[in-house]
Every structure is written in structure tokens, then in C-alpha cells.
Image (cartoon, rainbow, N blue to C red; front, side, top):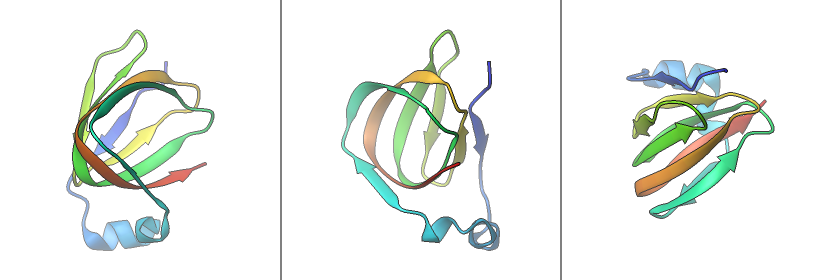
Length: 91
């Protein structure tokens, strides 16, 4: 099974090179819900505190400053502990 990839402490230049600041923004209040990925998603968390638990996998904590890639085909549960604001891109 493909894993969630988390990169921390990217520089502003690295983020600009990826085009992150041109991606759409998604927000969500504290909540818990199931989710599945039809495509690979890469996102950059501007704020938030989230635990994502893949089916049959270990929980992954992500939050502000993290660049995260969720693999195509993954089913998981999102538990948003603090409101999320993130840039995102599907590929």
C-alpha cells in the first residue's frame, strides 16, 4: 500500500518552485470524516492540526508548514483537531 508522504520545513523558494501559492485553497472546521482518493493529492497546510489514519495503516499527524502527498486509491479517516486551511492539487 502506498504511504502518506510528509515534507516539513520547505523554504518559500521551494514552495514557489512547486507553484503551491497558485493552487486552490480548501478549509474545514474541526471534524472527523472518512475520505478516499481517486487521484493523488499534494497539499500544503497553511494552518491546522490533523490526524489522517489510512485503512489498515498507522495514523499520520500533519499541520501548518507540511507539504503532504496522499496516494491515489487510499481510503482513510480525517480527524481535524484544529481548523484546516491548505493549498491543494490533484494529479
